[in-house]
Image (tube, rainbow, N blue to C red; front, side):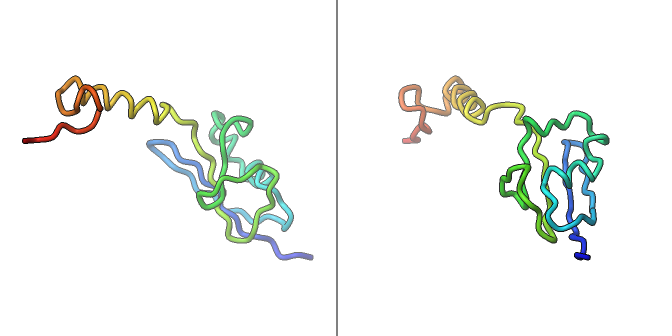
Amino acid sequence: MAEPLTIEVAYALPAQQSLLTLAVMPGSTVQQVIEQSGICQQYPEIDLTSQKVGVWSRPVKLDEQVKDGDRIEIYRPLIADPKDLRRRRAEKAKDEGRADKVTGGRKQEH
């Protein structure tokens, strides 16, 4: 019989994070490990059909097989689009006179 693999499943909210350690059989997929961990019952808002997952910060598909020592990370959806945030910051800088109104770059001090 094959030795079980030690896998971690991580999920973080702004105010709390969970890191669960499991022993799983070789050949288990990312999705099987997540389901076996029970983290979806602990955090019912997790939706594996829309949320991205990764292993050690590397995006993976749910059907990828895990390796001993992997840490599966379930990523929260982005609340705001990073491009929109940058655009808003740039507009604010122009409005406050910290950025050139034409180029959007920093104003040059003479």
